[in-house]
Amino acid sequence: MIVLLVGVAFVAGLIDAIAGGGGLLVLPALLSAGLPPTAALATNKLQGVFGTATSTLNFAHKGALRFRDVGLAVFWTFIGSASGTFIVARVGDTRLSALLPLLLIAFALYFLLSPRVGDVERARRLGERAFAFVIGFGIGFYDGFFGPGTGAFFALAYVALAGFTLTRATAHAKALNFTSNLASMLAFALGGHIIWSLGLTMAVGQIAGGWLGSHLVLRHGTRLVRPALVTVSLLLSARLLWQQFSI
View (cartoon, rainbow, N blue to C red):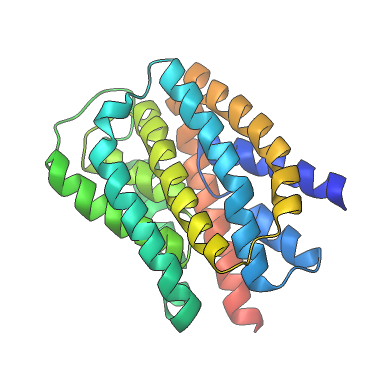
């Protein structure tokens, strides 16, 4: 079972680095291994921190990401994610799960059809400070509160509102995704929900997957990321719809 979970973490880290959505694999695997739902969510955040950290550092090393460009967004993402995690432990997330598949389908259509998605920088539509607060806090809160598709949402925001190329958007999205994972993990840790030995073992697979996925993004750019984002968004939608109608 441990070997299987490390393998799942590797594939999830690879997918996360390219398009996000690795939790689509990890959470069901952890639940199938017998973890309670809260422990599965918490342990998923722990192992996910290592994959997003690896891809973020690789993007920065290759010049696709400059940390000084994301400082303010990182701050608000951390605050938003920590807030969402504390709240979900008290009120639950069932209402949001009904709306999410429709949002993901809309995002998939945007990535597939919008002329702004490509290898050319576009005009910024939202100022840096407003972007940091609205997107950083908003999507960070969503990640701490619920989670699926966070990487795709960050990438969409950077393309649609900041005018980034898809490769650069993916790199910056990983930095914010790492931040939201870290904040959520720390909040779960305060509640004693994390299975540390399992999460740290799975981190080995996440690191390898994050490293490989970020290299593939840098090498292939939009040709790889665009279809990956569309596919992951539609798969997440299908899974969430299936969960709703099978209950």
